[in-house]
Length: 322
Ligand code: NDP
Image (cartoon, rainbow, N blue to C red):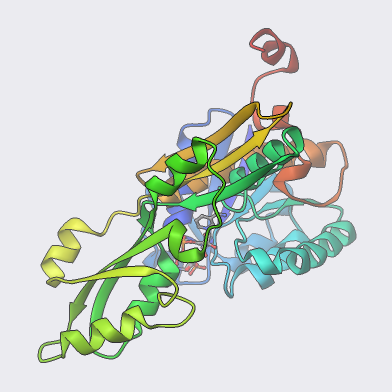
């Protein structure tokens, strides 16, 4: 049995707890949190303080870090990698090389193994972009996200004065996807690829048109997109928009000889983004333990991991299913 610890218990942490229940070769040792453990409502797992984790070195094969990418993982992953094998879902793309270097150093010093930035993007989408571009070097890759909730954009809406609550959906432009699949060559701008749809709850007496203008012109978040804004009640938001669906498509269109068209499409449709991401982390936790058993210490990303290490099946069984 692979003994797993969850570090940080939010949406992703709960998803990991659920996923471990579906993986018969894994056992959950507990949840480790910065909050008072008795205040954390798990679905059966024991909750402990972070201090208690330090004493469990021999009792845990791998820690799955479920903190946020903005401020938790940049410190938590290197810190815990000094003591344990770790997995994280660090998703700030531009900072992955810097994060990798820190975790790699910690892992080499602690003689541990860490796989960082797993999940679906970065993660499974990164792998599929690599496969597609290596197989069809003459071609073009586009990634489309959605339809799904973007936490970052929803947070940006909630920070506007007069907004009580809000949810933002990123919606891919399916017309553009169809044209690319048909082999059309397109010069695409940010605005062409995705739409944004916002559901916003306002404080009483707030000028809705002023807020709408503020949203659609917000730099970095909405100004470069066609954005639709709907004002709704808190009850409607709670009823219709509290799930966390997401997904997307990696689309690569290439040619081999002359105009022989080849299309590679990898698509995810997720009713729960955190539960799916958690399931990816759990599969990579298995690979992490295998690498550590081979004394392959250091940091890795999904691009470094042999696919068979994700599976609980033997090499022989996998070959039979090839
Ligand atoms: P949450 O905000 O739900 O949880 C983050 C941390 O906040 C937890 O680890 C927990 O730490 C703390 N926390 C959670 N709930 C509470 C609470 N009620 N009060 C106080 N603290 C709380 O984030 P998510 O789980 O939704 O997402 C985590 C990260 O997953 C994201 O930042 C993102 O980077 C990553 N992600 C990556 C994806 C990929 O494809 N690579 C896809 C989706 C997400 P503690 O228990 O120590 O207090």
